[in-house]
Image (cartoon, rainbow over all chains, first blue to last red; front, side, top):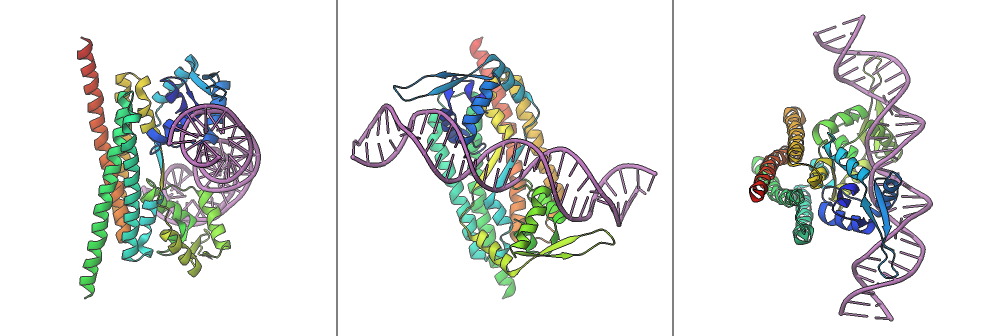
Amino acid sequence: MILGLLRRGPLSGYDVKYWVDRAIRFLWAASYGQIYPELRRLEQAGLVRSESVPQGSRQRNVYRLTTEGEAELRAWLLASDVGYEMRDVGLLKLFLADALSVDEQLELVRRIRSERQATLDRLRAMGPEILRPPGDTRVLVYDYGVEFHEWVVDWCDRAERRVAAEHRARERGAA
Amino acid sequence: MILGLLRRGPLSGYDVKYWVDRAIRFLWAASYGQIYPELRRLEQAGLVRSESVPQGSRQRNVYRLTTEGEAELRAWLLASDVGYEMRDVGLLKLFLADALSVDEQLELVRRIRSERQATLDRLRAMGPEILRPPGDTRVLVYDYGVEFHEWVVDWCDRAERRVAAEHRARERGAA
DNA sequence: CCTTCCATGTAACCGGTTACATGATTGC
DNA sequence: GCAATCATGTAACCGGTTACATGGAAGG
């Protein structure tokens, strides 16, 4: 991921974190505790080169891709792995939610909905910044993020209605 | 998650793995190396009780929820966290795919599509097994899995067309 | 002046995977 | 007889987070 981000031009560790958080947080996360040591490893491996570019007396080290780094990036992009791993606490809770009352279940669905909506809003707000300069596949994946969250929010709305409807059906059955 | 699965009736560590892999693999994963030690910790904490139920001379230890375990489960379900963490190698690669040729980009989108389609097929095939007995919120989340993967497959189809269309547009522009 | 942002890093911790080891049972 | 499935576990490893520490610059 770092090699891929660096391809467009040199970035500092801080920049890497900044762009990851804005553009691809919803599909990949990274912390400083991972980025800074990794940049060093990449430099030791000869895949990136660091360069000190202080802003006044504030230090700043930017990294740029080497020819070897570019080759490594290409090799990784062409490798067959396109898998994903998800850890979705909200949906997991919903799956196990028969231990809750109907009202509590509805509350849970609404909480999931509102969190996803918030993520969607953030993503939309950052769109203009993320997409300058555009870059076709970047726009593509940004749109994926937006559409996906729109879909989830809509699913939550339908799920809420389904839970409520089944509840009413059970009440009628019991009466 | 274990407490939630146990609520419907006693399960062995093997059973837990079996059901996680089938029903919720797409939103939460678990390995034996995590499940067995965790079951012990849960027992030590008094949240589950183990019981030896050998099948012939083949050992089998099933665990059932204690009253404390049920309370703990409810507390967890009601807690506010409904966040998610995603690690999507396919989409990450696509985001960084401007280092690839258009043909290679198309290849990547198709590979993502075919993997997601395979996951969808597996999920559908297991539907009848997963949903017996039904359990409202379990059906709900199963449907989420199916619909989500249908959406992703459709998105891949559209993405492929978009990549191809932009390529043709650039060629016309260059000509 | 004070807050926020820019910027770099580390140490402790932990959740989780991988690989391995073992053995009984079922069904072809 | 053999493969697949049922069943339980552990040790080494590792990817990644959290919390902490430090300090300059910009802007209100």
